[in-house]
Image (cartoon, helix red, strand yellow):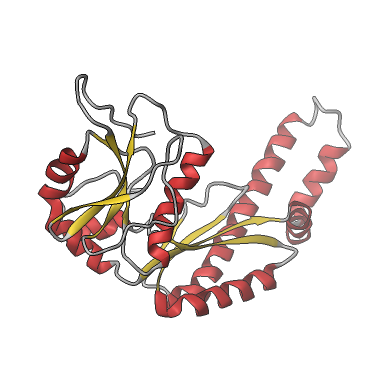
Length: 270
């Protein structure tokens, strides 16, 4: 967790920062923020931009599941109203309102404003997929006679005698699943990529969730994107379980947006 604790003797509550929005945005009054009890969310403006914040007691730890959900809920509620937001990662705390204005917003106001303009009307959709275990194993064995033969041989041997063969079997199955994940990610991007402004692929190293792709989509295409993603999920039913998340704040695209505005700006992006 990225949490900066105010210096000893600092007076007044600290500010938990969810992200940066245009100065003319409205605070999301329908949701509450992090902390116990959940705090009200407000805007602290500086020039053309504003920080989306709530007050927190820096002596009380954050990090409960409720806090994590509240962080995402605040940011996603902003995007759902088609207001651009630069989301900060969970746990970003600044030493009070003056520090938000003078240390966070002031030095980077123009760069933040430029980045926000590049995200106007856009939201992130993320698709994550896992293979149905029994089905993918059957498919692997049917497509790879060498793996099927090795599996049969290891099953007939004592556990100690088959130790290295079992390791090799696991490696071959894992590689085959990774290759299938890469191919299915390619199909996903080919199908949905034309509807997006930008695409970010996950690392593809998690065999439990080999499909992890995020799309930056303009609001005029949200409905079509969702419909085509659902069609793809139906076509994969029984083989791959797909979750569609969105519209979300542009968690995977904020660093690129800010980096495009200025190479000198860095921040605790989600």
